[in-house]
Length: 311
Image (cartoon, rainbow, N blue to C red; front, side):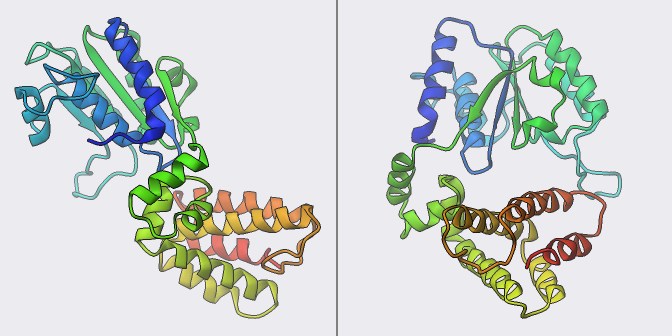
């Protein structure tokens, strides 16, 4: 598993702790989607379950590595969204899942090494599940490792966060990010990185799956609405039909560009007539709308209310 260059500082620190036999019992890997924290977790877990690791990395040949690669390692537990009784996926991690995990981790390792469990996304635990996890965090069994992954760690209760060693992934240096994109074969890495706000993982994903064109479409829609043309209801329908959360991300970015241009005394690129203060308000509102897509409110009304404020 190839390492991402902006992971190496975190990796070196964990490796040093492992070499001192001072690893924590719980890690919280957090940061924006696209920075590779799940790849980091997979690499770390594979190394823990390997009997002959090299600088913390799995050897790829021992029995532990073979079982890990096959997805059948008896000391490896992956907890994510479960299914309801009708077979549909849940939108949260529930208390029964955590109780089952805690019971599993209370038993001895079957292969005599580490027992490792990941909870992903940990920020999807409901209140009862989070409370059930606290006992396991407070009274960990020997040689157990619990790894929580969260794009939005602020959704975790403070008592969970405080009991984990936090590893936070930040945007890498732009030069490093651009060099990596070029090595990965992204044609216009600079434009993709700019669109993704400096996030190299998102930049690569968007460049390869046509999201940059979607970003241009969002800006065209906002420019048309700012010019008093087009209908917000038509824009809402189009956005809801094709990754509305991502479109709202691009919309928030567009508002930030409008605000930046106005603060510099330049003509705003989308020609909005919002005053200096309101682009920032609209930026925040678009982010709230993106969060609102996860809830019970009607998505079309959320978007319509937002777009009606763009002038």
